[in-house]
Image (cartoon, rainbow, N blue to C red; front, side, top):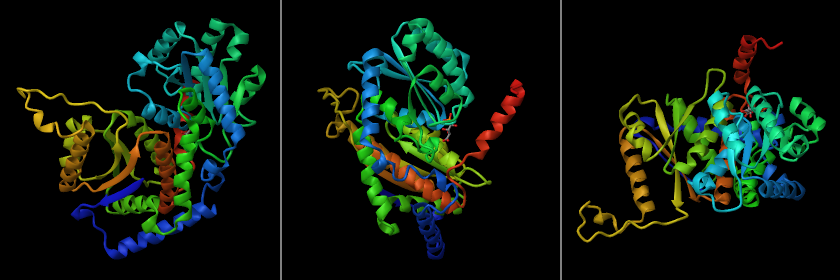
Amino acid sequence: MNINITLSQNDLSSIKEKEKMKEKVEKAYSTLLNKNGLGNDFLGWIDLPINISEKEILDIENTAKMIRKQAEIFVVIGIGGSYLGARAVIESLKNNFDYINKKDSCPIVVYAGNTMSEDYLSDLIEMLDKKDYCLTVISKSGTTTEPAISFRIIREHLEKKYGKQQAKQRIIAITDKEKGVLKELANEQGYKTFVVPDDIGGRYSVLTPVGLLPIAVAGFDIRKLILGAKQIREQLVNENHIDKNIALQYVLARNLLYKRKKSVELLVNYQPNLVYISEWWKQLFGESEGKEGKGLFVASVSNTTDLHSMGQYVQEGSRIMFETVLHVNNSNKSIKIPMLENDNDKLNYLLKYSLTEINHKAEEATRLAHLEGDVSQIMITIDKVDEENIGQLLYFFEFACGVSGYTLGVNPFNQPGVENYKKKMFSLLGKK
Ligand code: PA5
């Protein structure tokens, strides 16, 4: 992984501003690693890639194997940090069309509990009528309304379809080790369970069973994912020099831009299978930093698709943003543009390029154009989209988010604002 930062003329900070921010970032880095900042009881994710035990990995792999034998569909019930990490990894690694044309023996992963749409759940149940399926219900608190409702509905369907006893073998609960309604239910019914560690919050939980079980069920190598996270952790934890630590460079750049009144960070990708990486990233940074009237508003686009819609705004709209571009060096597959003798569509001039090279040129051109439009550019490069690189990327963002939150002066590990709507909803619904 590496990082490149190109600032527009209007976004250049003075040496003094830079030095001041550098000091803040370095202090935030020490606070995170010395574990003496706000929310320091939620720092289990820092050492997770080296602490996760062989026993737990094997348990996850064996459970995944058992699910793969029984199910064509695997339903992941969860919301926020309890599903986005798994979805980000699965969507980025899977074949884009496997919902139509799945070849291997792994179930298709579908999601519930992240919406209360009656139409969505009805469609899901209709589909599950015709398929063999297993499910996991994931909730750290064990009390979140959206997944709880979905679980009740789908559980009833599962029990009708397979009978109560068999249904129990098809349910995996991932929750707190001792408290919460879900834990009580799991104990009562005898479901297989995995634990969300006390010291890891939802949006930092992708490398716990919360993310790893669905990823393993989908057929991806969780050991490589953990390995990637481990590799980048080594670099980020042991290099306190800002010029050599890519996470600190990212934190410095985004906080300097924020200081210069850039209030929006746009994560940009150039391939549709990375859209859920952006969704996960938005939750990570939005929920971690958006508090006390502070924080960058994090948004995302998927190019070149969105160049034909939001591209106009980015180029010429309100000058409130900068872009963080996810650059992927290599594709995993290749496809040739055919040569036409008569060149009647005038595309033969492109034959010397691969499609990835053309996509890279579009990316480079966009960066130049947006820079001209006063949109500063941070570019984060990974080698390709595979388990190891995605593991690196996820840990990189988690680490940067922790340091950035402390740089901003907030607690990056709580989410007090999420509670407000819940209280109001419960009161409207008449919950006692
Ligand atoms: O990051 C977070 O902590 C949140 O997004 C939670 O993951 C989300 O609210 C779901 O909570 P729970 O896992 O308790 O159901």
